[in-house]
Every structure is written in structure tokens, then in C-alpha cells.
Image (cartoon, rainbow, N blue to C red):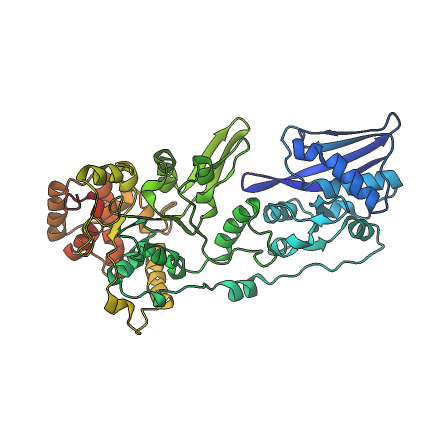
Length: 512
């Protein structure tokens, strides 16, 4: 007897349908899995047969062939356990499954027959809908995540027996329902707020400029000045995520296994990722033999925070250069080439020297000039050029820390940011990939960043005396355009250029 069921597998950030065929024939007892299975799929033979037995069913005792089509694409992971088991039970019992072509199945089996959660359920549900399946059957822990996909029914199951009885009409299951709009309303909130930050008015202004134009930002200051505290609150002033952005971010989180907690089934707020400085190149940009997303892709549509920037390996930092320019990263391995989205805002923080107190008026720096220069040289010039704003963050004074007056709330800053983003959206409508000032092309800079005579004179003086690079020149123009947008000005003035130049601390000879 032959039984056929449908599943799906993840490839990159999307999924593709997998047709699972199980054929029982006479001959010596054997279970053969074909169709380019990896080790985890091959091991499913033992998990599946034990789960079938402990669920009170039988599998074919002769030669059983399991085919995973298409046969020219490698299949990975334990997510095929559930559909394989269902097909084997149907063949062993010589029992037809009702309307099985309507469903897509995914799930890992425990030896007891319990269905365990798996990664990548959201892209699998999207692919099932695309293929015309009416419903998807997933582990109960993944049901809310899959239910975010409109236009397809989602059934969460707890064990193998429950699933098989549902397919044979012996048991009724209720589909999982989720209201995406209501979920967004309930979960688009943050635990932190800029009103909790005392002082640091210049830093808050720079952050508002950076977020308004989606510019990358580097904090430079002594230990305890509040660099990490400021960075953690940056997502709170981003424009709210729309459904398209949320689905893109959730797909990546799902593939990386970050949504297995039932309380976090969907990404409704801007991601904030802060990897440790010991992270590898592969951990940061993605990779392994079969490429998977890295931290920069998990931070898609959000913030990637690199604290203690000079402590990261230089080779690790250099791999950021292409994603910062393109908003995506392409990884090529023997298994193939994959492109992952990586449109994030880079926020970095560093001390001015190894001891952290270079230039501090209250603490003496113990570092020699050579040590300071060597510490700074850990960050390459090309990477610094790709960071639009370099900001000095001094230590907070006691009077500011002890003040009971709350700072400006994130909601107030976010309203101004949203207004500027809407201006940019209108400006770049029909202009290609660019949606913010930070993504302007050379042609768009020439078109939208015209300088008057006074502003042009200030720019010329800065380029001549402060030795800015050509890329820094473009960055200054982009930041100046954002500052002008915040001031609701059509033309970039000398004041806007001057403020943008002040945000290039590490480019200026004055810093050294």
C-alpha cells in the first residue's frame, strides 16, 4: 500500500513543500529513507517507530520505503517525524486518511508519541497557503505562531494518536484563532522608556537624529556614562512595526528557534540584539555548512548593539561592511548560496581608551598615547566611515542623576521621528530601494542634498581641515538632510551641516 502526505522544509528564510510517500511491500523488514535526508531525518526511523508503538499503532513489518520529494534538495531536522509517522500508520493499518491532501503536517515526535515544537513554522504555514493547502497541523506550542498567517486554518496537536484520530474522523479538533490586529495592539509596548534617562540631552538629540534617518550610531564615553542604557531605549522611538515588517522579522526568529516560548509567538516590537564581543563571524552574519541567519539578520528591522566595539575581533567587524551598505547578506557554501535580509540600525559603544578615562576631567587616564592609538586602531577606517554619527557621551553629573524631573518620554520623541519618516517616505516614493535618508544613493544625494553657498563653504572647510574621506562627506550630507527634516526645512543650512560635522568625532583630528 502507498500513502502520501505533505509537509514543508525551510530553505534560507522561506520554505518549500515536501511530498512524503510511504510504501509498504513484502520482503525482509527494513525502513529506508530516500530523498537526500540529513542525519536527523535518518534518525527519525527510530523515533517514529517507537512513537508509533507507544501510541498503540503498528507500522509495516516488511520493506518500507520513505521518499521525500523533491529528491534533489537536502532535507534537514526532525520536523518530518509527524507526517512520516502518520503515513506509516496508514500503510500498516491499510487505512485511508480523510482528505489528507488538504493538510500540511510538521512536528517532531518524542518516543512517547508527544508532538514537540519545531523551528520555522511561520514560513512553513505561509508556503502551505501558497500551495493551496486548506490547513496546517503543527505542534500545539507552535499553533499561535502559525495562526498569524491569514487564509489558512491551523490545528495544534499534542500527540500522535490525537492527530491520527482527527484524520480518520474519530476525533474533532478546533482550529487555533489569532487576531493579528489585536495581538499588535496588546504587544507593541516596551519595558523601558527614555523618560528614565537623566541628563544626556546631547546624546538624546543625536539618537533622535539617527533614528529619524535610520543612521548608524557610535557612542564614545567612559564607563558608567549610560551608553548601554541609552542604546536599550532606542527601539522605543522607532516607528511601530507594520504587518509586513513583523512577518519578515518573525520568519527569521522562527527559523532561529527564538519563538518556541508560547508567550512569544510573534515579533510585534523592534528587535534589539546585543551579541557578546566573543561572537564569531558565522554567529554574526550567519553561515554553517547549511547557511542559517546570524545576529544581523535576527536584528532585521531593529537594532544591532555592539557594546565594547574594539573588543570584537577585527575580522568579525569587517564582515559588517557589506550588510551595512546593502541591507542584506549573501552567504555562499557548498550547499548553495543564500541571501538573508539584514536591514538594521547599527548602534555601537566604546571607551575612549583601554582604561576608559581618556579626556575625563575628573579621572586621570593611565594609558600611554601609543596604547590609546592602538586601542582606537582596532576599528578600521572603512567601518567607521559607515557609521554616520560618532557621539561623545560624558559622565552624568550628580545634579542630573538626583533630579526628580523625568526626561522626555519615548512617545514624544517617537512622534517627531514618525513625522520625519513620513517626509522621507514621500520623498523616496518611486525612487527604488531607498526609504530613509541613510539609504540614499549617490544620485539621490545629489538631488536631495543641495547646499547653499554658506553651507557649502562650511563643508569645504571641514573637508580640507579635518581630512574627511569621500564616504564621510556623503554621510555628513545624509545626516544634515535628516537634521533639516527635523527642523521642517526644505534647504540644508550651515547650521544643519555644522551639527552633522559635530557628529563625526572619530574623524576629527581634535579627538586624537
